[in-house]
Picture 1 (tube, rainbow over the protein chains, first blue to last red):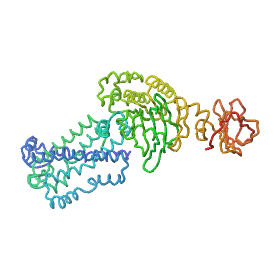
Picture 2: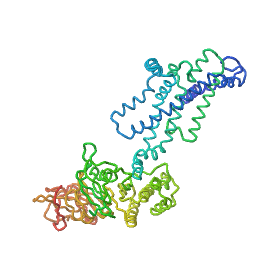
Picture 3: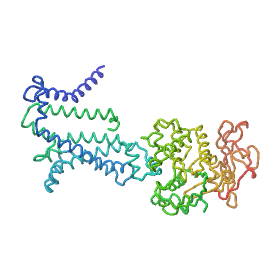
Picture 4: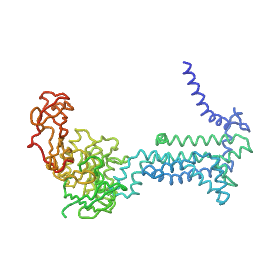
Length: 259
Length: 319
């Protein structure tokens, strides 16, 4: 009996920890007061409206959206063929390739960011936007390879041969029978990559520079100067965006099957 | 050169491992050929080479007089019904059958697809997803998908092995009917001699990448050339003779209870209508079966028996 109570207590505390911050942020976002605080002082939507009026938020939101969409597309452009090759063929050293492809997940972002800054951006002087783009594509690549591999592994290999015997070229068989059957996995990889890129902090922190920063970095910078509830309001909006995307994906595609 | 499909000095290899060596085989128009042998004998490899899924190390493949050795599978006009059927899971039954015709831009697509589905008795299933069909139905879809392309040769990989006994008979009759109606040349791969005997016009028995024997089912069944083929078609007692050849008997041909030979029963089992015995003798192992009405013998019993010469077949080789 005491075991049961203990189990429920642990469950409750865990859930509270997971979801609690979300409610605190929402409450703080709706505050009528002038500083970030919980419980909120009065209720108002003024900080939510303020979010849309801050120009740097609009700019950094655009940067983050661009990176999340095109960085993830670039990662899929590399990751889908890589996943195909690694699952279909016994590539010599395939496991090593897989491990290296996963390294952006394993190596701490601080190190990746510092290394990219010190050895890519400073010596070569690549534009900040380009550096961010390549960094985000690389960070998302492991998810692209893994998630797409998982759905590729469930797919029979002989359907490609069947397609070729019915008149497809090799590439045609990939386009006509492989892609349509892994599109759920590709979409899942896109969403996972999008969210990963959008929420990325440590690497972007090093690479952000004058005039170009991602939204999370901009939020940190904003908070250092203005300790008002607009950051909470923005966080709440972003959280709703993520939830909406994942919910839609689950609803229409059975997203959870792939992750 | 009246052969519709001819394999000339065909050598097939996976890397350094040679799977089929210098194989010569001619298949006539409209013939139903079985490639028979145990796993690893090269039968599937040969079939894949005809389909173009494997490039020969050397040799030539001709189909309808045309050298197709270097052509990709898409240009060979060869159909293949995969053992696992390989239906496209994202397409309906109709679209699976229409797949090749669509690629070809066939103007008569709808009529051909419907005719194809009718041929295999699946007209009512056009709108279903492959996953909603039974194994036997999926196989018939795969068959229709190949047939509507009117291939020069139809290859079938173990067409009956995934079906239960009742469906197996049904599919066997189906394949023979389709072959009669369309006149398509068929090559099927099997490890099951009873399938090969029942279906094929001619059987190619393969072993270690070579043809061990080629003949009609009757020839293979009644006159195997070697111990390997004899064993495959049910001659379970194979004993060497002094000149280098061998004699083989089916279990039913062994006469137990009297005769010039003696042996000790090692194993006995009851199989319903028959009793089966394994007997150790000085010359080798003898397998016998007798009607169940005969009295049961137990293991360890010494017994006299006869291997009548007139019920034996003579083999060129013991092995």
